[in-house]
Image 1: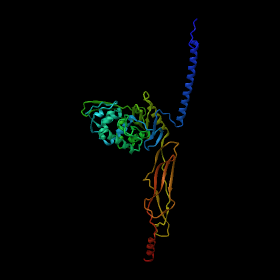
Image 2: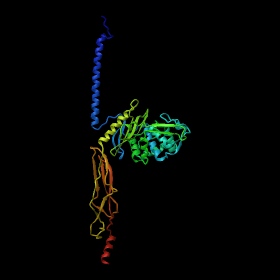
Image 3: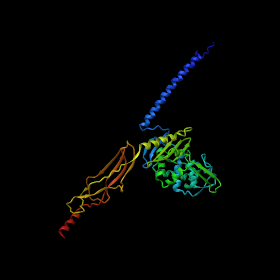
Image 4: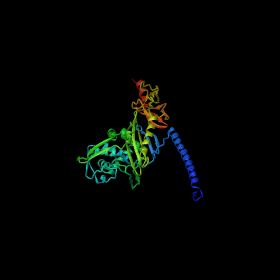
Amino acid sequence: MCTLWNQNGMTAGKGKRIMRRAAAVLLAVALFCCSGVSARAKEGEESGELQLYAQAAVLMDADSGRVLYGKNEKDVLPMASTTKIMTCILALEYGDPDDIVAVSSYAASMPKVKLYVKTGETYRLGDLLYSLMLESHNDSAVVIAEAVGGSVEGFAAMMNQKARDLGCFDTYFITPNGLDAVVNENGRTHSTTAEDLAKIMAYCVTDSPAKDRFLAITQTLNYDFTDAEGTRHFHCSNHNSFLGMMKEAISGKTGFTNSAGYCYVGAVESEGRIFTVALLACGWPNNRNYKWSDMKKLTAYGMERYAYRDIYEHRDFQDIPVINGIDGESNDPYAEAHVSVRVADNGVQSLPYLLCDEDEVEVRAKVANVLSAPLSEQEEIGEVCYYLNGTLLKRFPIVTEEKVEERTFPWICAYLLDIFLP
């Protein structure tokens, strides 16, 4: 019988048995490690820490702009075609959907994904907005930008001004379609943060005067149109798959470039609450579905933990003595003057705010115990402040309800003359 030996003098059969045992040990170690990771992930999510694929993510209360959950939310990153929510909302606010707009050679030169418009063709601006938001066509974005802003550079200036108006100071737009770009003279890239992007979406769906039209476009599943001459026909399908994954989904926009990875910004509405979610660098090919996993986790986190609570507290204050003030009722120079005060809350009767069980609200009132004349009507003499987890949330001034004149020497002389010289 012939026995086979390897170079180390080991029989082939014995070598196979050792290899099988080693493989079994490695498998056991791998299973142990995976169970440990799984246990840590479960423990983290139970403690409120979510395991997300995105490098940067935000769950935001669209009403207040408060970040309810954040992961690297202030990191500046490219955002790909999520850019187009800003392009769309500016076109709706400053453009006319019925305007007929022309295609420039620059617009026609845009890379895929594109509608394949041709230089010199004309289109209805409103139709191109569906091409922009449903199919994410890069050439349509440039046609829109040139029509509304006069040029891509002019439109980018409008985008950046709107971002600043919304308090998005870490956002910088260069292109209307989200293609990776750098401004050489200052080295700034086309980029945003997850917090800024969620804030822009919140504006689009809650505060913009064009919010209804924005929602109508982004909720459309299919749209057909032609060029202005009626010679070319187009069909657009909505690529925002999340609309079909959750009945609460009301808007969203996908994005991808090689630098940005997969990105997403969306909005959901549930029981009067509107949440916006932004995901940046949420995987690269072949992980395009990571963003849907993160969206489900973040929206579930918001809907399960947060509910509206009325934090308003009615406050009444006693009249405050006024040193050297004239008592307006008696006109007696020896009578102590007082002034009535109230909270200048413009008739507010409630102050609903989205809170979770861990949130702590504190109401602090600060008002003087005594005042000095003269005082004017509606003069601020204190404040009522609402704090959420130690951060100022709302401030109402406390003001006087009437004026109080000062008891001066000429006034005393005039008073005595009225008594003794009738």
